[in-house]
Length: 193
Length: 221
Length: 219
Image (tube, rainbow over the protein chains, first blue to last red):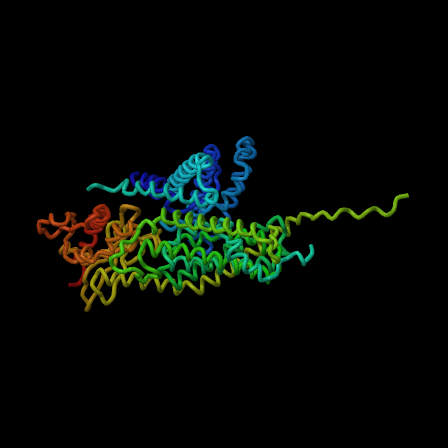
């Protein structure tokens, strides 16, 4: 169990999906200065990630051993289909949520965090439980990064910075500072023995 | 649909380098730009992989654009891109295993790199094979230049080497943060700031000088 | 009197389901063909690279053997066959090195969590004397300039040909001269401890199997 907790915490803070592993940067940098939207985006991502982890385990265990070269194609097809299904399900079950998420849902398909999750999970040889914990941890990490960046950008809107810097450049430098801060989490689980 | 509206072919090649640089202007493909630029060798390898995938995909998509029904075009493009990415991944693993290990999952992540899919959707599916090829080459060159610049800055400052060869003397204390994740963000951020400042200065200068003939026509997306 | 009916507006017809499936299927087949071709072309080279890397690592930790046997951990014994239900990639392997027809030691993979992420090592081990023969780092993402000294610091690495297991880490200058003491890297004690812990836990588990196997070898 300790190993599983390490996988989750590692993916969430120590090796944060966005700030350390550079996955999910499109929503991270594109997110508006609204913490609310960021939370919803993060939640949608966690949901899709968990489903993806499940699907990846099924693929890796039963289908891909026969055709390992089809890995990338199989993953992307599964992810695209999953997102499509999730979108249809949300549309039917909760139109309000669907309206709130709007454009973000289809964008999850090209979100490198989902495919990145699938590939990292496979490369590290994670089983079902490990993959699920990895997905949840990664999703939480992504959400934390999104929410932090959104709240920082809310303040950035009102900041008194030179005109030419009012673009992605400043956001990236902020992200760098955030990434630096998260480096402090390294060594969180190291044993004292 | 007047052909006269299209810019000259050389423009398709050049636009990807500066004016429509995929990373600096369109802000696409940032994941690899930050993740694998901790050394020049890695940047070059990633650029080579992207060049291969972009060229191959643009070529194929432009050749088959008439027979692909609109409803499934995105799925088809993704299928084509995934094929080339798989091939690139395998070739890299066979020829340069150490570099392939450093690039890790990011070769496979080229599949969801918005640059590739973006170029198919915006250009290759609507233009001739020749123009699509030029567009792909131009974008790849722009991508390569940007990544190499980032890789150079990060490796020289963060490791004291360029392509593995020491640049400074042995007493140089490397600025280690540059080859770690925060360094990636900071480097790209600074490059974007400089780029934006240069652009502003260029625009301000253009405003004060009379309009020059041959100002480029903005290509409709 | 109306003239001929105006031509219906040119509405792009949504392609029939058959055409959609046909297109996707066709491209799928093409994709499959290309990938299989690339696969058959690159696989031999990839396998050769992996074998060469493994051989180099084993050579480094066992002191240049002539050849090595691959054995798999199967339950609580070593065997030459893959354990049921596992492949060459998933099974845990140890490597027995030979020189001049004599066994010179086992190479074992040890892994554990380091400062930043997991560390993977290959160690050379002689069960009869509980002595380590060598150590090389296979995978590490430790902090450059600090933790990465576990593979860059030659003094640290050189210790692994003299110590006995189980290892005990000591800080520089605090050693008492016992054979199982390993001097940790100043400024990288956590990464050093991770290395020690990985080796100790693995040898605790696999050591008895190696000892039992070694006893059965022709001397």
